[in-house]
Structure formats: C-alpha cells, structure tokens
Image (cartoon, rainbow, N blue to C red; front, top):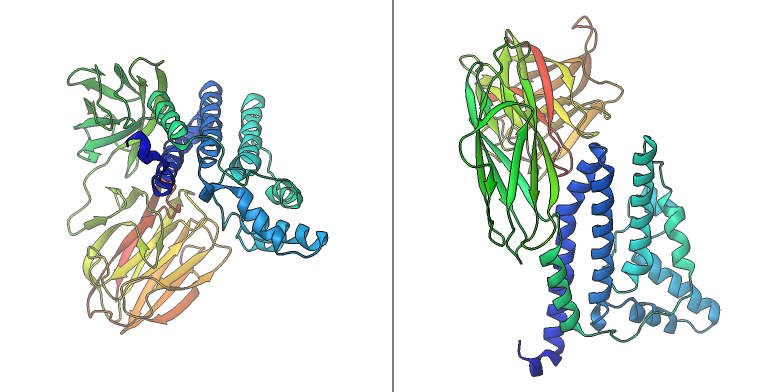
Length: 492
C-alpha cells in the first residue's frame, strides 16, 4: 500500500492481524517437528527448533505492539479504573488477568480444564506470560533429553497464577511502526528454516506379499521464498528410486515429488498387517539460506487381501489385513463422537438383523489416546456418513468398555454407557432385538459376560451393516495405531 495510506487505522489493524496470524500458523508446522525431534532424541534439532519457536513468539509480541487493539495495557487499565480504592484496583486488575490466563482458581483452571480458555495474542501478554511459560517447558524437555530421562511434570497453575497478582504497567499506546515491523515478519518467515512438510502416499496403500508399491513424497515450502536444492533419502525398506532423488528448486508454496518403488519382504507373513517402518531424510532450506535436515518417520504395511464377503470403509486413512482368521486395522481418527466420526471398519453388509449377535475379540489395541476405540460398529450403511441406527461397542485404553449410540436418529453418536476397569484383550458381543441393542464384554474367553447396557436406537433398519472397527480418537494429534482382532462370529 502506498505510504500516505499506511496511516489508516483499518489498514494498520489488518496488517498487524495478518502478520500475527502468519506467525501463529508456523506453530502448526513447528510443533510436530519439535515432538518428532524429542521422540528421536535428536537434541540438536530440538534445540534449533526451540530457539526458532521462541524467536517467532517474541516477534509476535513486537508486531502486536504496533496497534492499540492488540495491547495488554488498555485491558489492565480499564479494569483498574473500575476500582475506587487501591485494594479494589488491585483486585480488578488481577481478575482481568485471570480471565485471559487461568480463567479462575485452581479448581476451575485444572479441574474444570478452563485454563487458557480466554487466551489472547497481545503485546505484553506474549512476552510476559506465554514466552516464559514456553521457555520453561522447552528448557525442561531439553534437560530431560540431555539426561536421558522423562520430562518432569510441571504444576502450571503454580507457575502462572503469580503473574495475575503482579502490579505492572504496560504500554497504553502502540510501540513501533506497524508496516516496518510487519515487513520484518515477512522477511524472517521468508528466511526461516524448518518450514517444510513431507507427505507420503503409497500406491497401493497396502502391499500384498511379494508385491511392490510406489511411494511418492510431496514437499511443501513456505509461501515467501522458493527453496534451494532439496535432497531426499529413503531408508528402512527395500526401495529403489524411479527418478531423481533431488529437486533443484521448489517454488514458494509449491510442491515437489520424488518416487521410489518399494518391494515387500520375501519372508512369509506372520501377522495380519506387517509394519514396514521407514525414514525419509530431507535436506532443504530457503534459497540462499542454510539447509537443515528434517526426518520424516512413517510405516508402510504388507498384508494379504481380506477374504470374500468383507467390505471396508474408512475416513481415517485406515488399512486392513487378514491372516488365518486374525484381522488387523491400522488407522487414525480424531474422534468418534457427535459431529466428528472418523474410523476404519472391516464389515459385513446387512448382517445385523433382529435376533442376531455379533462377537469379536480385541486382541491388542495401540494406545493413541485414552478414548481410542476398538470393537464392533453398526449402522444402516457403514459407508454412508450420517446413516441411522448408529451404535458401537468398543474397548478403550483408559475408559473401559463403552457402548455409544444415537438417541435422536440424526446419525451421530451422542450418548454412551460404560463399564470401567477393562482393557484389551477382551471379547465384545453386540446383540440386536428389534430396535434394541445390547453390548456385553467378557475377559475370561466367553465363560462369563458382563452387560454394558441395553439401549434403544431410533431409525435402525431391518438389516444393518456390522463390522469390527478402530478409531485412534487422538483429538486431532495425527496419531495412528494398530488394532488386532480374532474370533469374529455372527450367530442367531
């Protein structure tokens, strides 16, 4: 925008808000890389990423200081003015700070899980509250990596609550020039490392024994500057590149592709889904800047095709395998509740009718979250999101066996009953009587059964699809896990 127009309050606000949001978006790229570096025990990469993370947070504090709408000072001052005595002013200031941080006392912040409920990205709040908090945690994780131990738990309420009592003055007016600072944000983001992501697509998603798959790698870069040379190396599997494994340049916000042919091992399968873990190391950086090394870890799978009569459905990138009456599903899934219904299922079409019972044993379940689900699932058409008659009976890693169901016929799960204290391995049984469904579980091989609940589900069709299923239920963290099943039976 032309210089004379940069004094517009609307322009300044939008410019600062966009720059602030651009910095915030980088957290979605950096946080998974921090987690991956920690898991690999890569201290050098973790340290570099931590330094970049804190630098961008401090830059966010700077850019938000250039517009009055993003200042902590006016918020605190307005609270003070409500008091008529010094004690009142101090309490109103504390309460104003509580609202944008802990949201209440310990019972509310921790027990009620309302900590950070009213968070803001404001000048003064970033530098005085969020940066020290992140610094403390990143330092603790770095120390844990160096010492070869787990990070020590932090009582975050004890760390944060003292800040709400501080009587400190904060700027009431903007500090610095919005256009100049936003330009610096753009320059820093254009030159910053670790702004790439790697996505691996296997075709086909699961390899049959003694067959092969093609693996394609897509490389996304920042939107401000092209990369320089990008080098790829795939290890951990029997693979041969089908073309160059280097890219001379990838355009801003562009993609690049490198392809390998991966061969399945020549040893017989010993499980329904055989994992083939791999690593892809990528060296890259913005053009003219230092290159960094990024490691993407993943898993391909080898499996025999599932038997005749089985169908599959997934909206969580699940893969399926069968071996001599044993089954496995590997997949993701953010949740299986109300508007978020993400799972993978191996099912029989129209098999659940009045008077039918379906049984399966969950032999093993990956702990992708406390509410990860694995068990039996049914609805009129499993491959049709929103289909009626929706019920699932599942074991979880930390919340027992859960019968979830749709009470109002809208095709979403909205109510559950459960038995706590049960984990895999466990036998699960779902029995139908008209529109009623009874879930039960057994931990002694079927000698005795415990009823979870009997529920009525409106809109259930006369014949419903039914199958075994899994959902990582990881809250959107991107985790994947494998569940193994056996003992599938449909009886009348």
